[in-house]
Image (cartoon, rainbow, N blue to C red; front, side, top):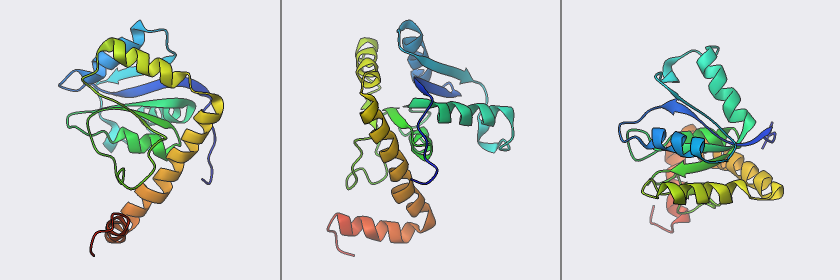
Length: 176
């Protein structure tokens, strides 16, 4: 992908609001109790309407760009948009949610990791430890694959949703 660069920190990263189910707070506590390198912050602010030069937005972008593993816990729904943000920056999404991903049924999604939100704290730590231990070459491959997924699936969908849908139908061998 054009402009791709590897992350400077091999760590887990999350910055976001608390959720009513407590998943995000639980995840932050799990990481604080583990020995895994991480940078997390629970905020009271939803930054979607902030201007790009706002310090909160700048901190969010910097964390995404610097970190190899982006934690993507579900928010108020079942899904997590953070997964797509991670892919935009060419970072490895670690999704803690029971949701579908755009085109996952016809696209190689092996760059991402998925953890059930019903997993025990011990299971989550074990899985995160395994993820953290991937070799550098695999880390680089997964980062590049995430960026390509964003470029070839997500951007194309928003450029022309109808064409994207027709392409998906073809890949599924469904009638148009």
